Length: 274
Image 1 (cartoon, rainbow, N blue to C red):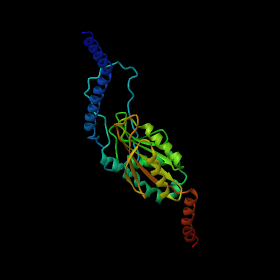
Image 2 (image 1 turned 180 degrees about the horizontal axis):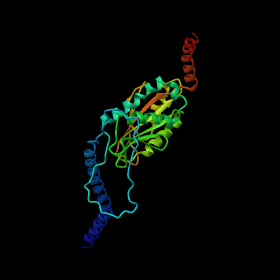
Image 3 (image 1 turned 135 degrees about the vertical axis):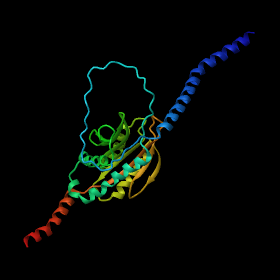
Image 4 (image 1 turned 180 degrees about the vertical axis):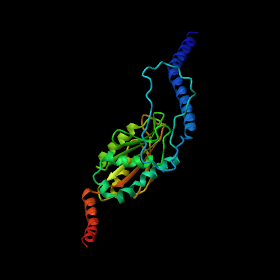
């Protein structure tokens, strides 16, 4: 009889020790199922309204709210987190990619610009194609170098702008970009401005850095003469994939731009002397 009691006590103690972990495991599985269901719904995307005609500039206006607020219990229905549709993501990348022609055709205008000033040119192009629901501007600036789309106070697209200053600085730029992302930020871009002569070598170095990152999972595409696309997963959020597109823009050197401007002035001077 005492052996039976001892066996029973041992079984109860083993059960009590394992029960918390079993309960946590079941709750985690249910939470992952709920999050994946929410993600499937929110993957329908948010509406991105393109402009019929590009705008040059729109001043946002918003009335101030009363400084005193009374606490209220929310009765609104649950809204899925907004995400950026793949088609719009590709369109945004194409708009930014077209800036290479603008830079190529206006070297003297870009030769002396810093990251913040170059970013402003990208913002003008992007907001010329899209309009926001409230302010008239879908794309905004936060900090000195990043470009973002914000919906309901949530960032759904982020692009970071950096000059190429070597692999170490590029790796730090990736760190900075990843630090901006919340769990719902799935699509982003890293714009690199290059003033060296060998852009192919720079692209290869960028590719090597991206592939050596601990968050790296796979390369979706890598064009030695164009963009590259990668899938990252942060250790803090193992169930969530992040899409990063890298773009390289060859920037004119100040001396080269001045030389080009000087050469174009020669025939004008000859013509006026006649």
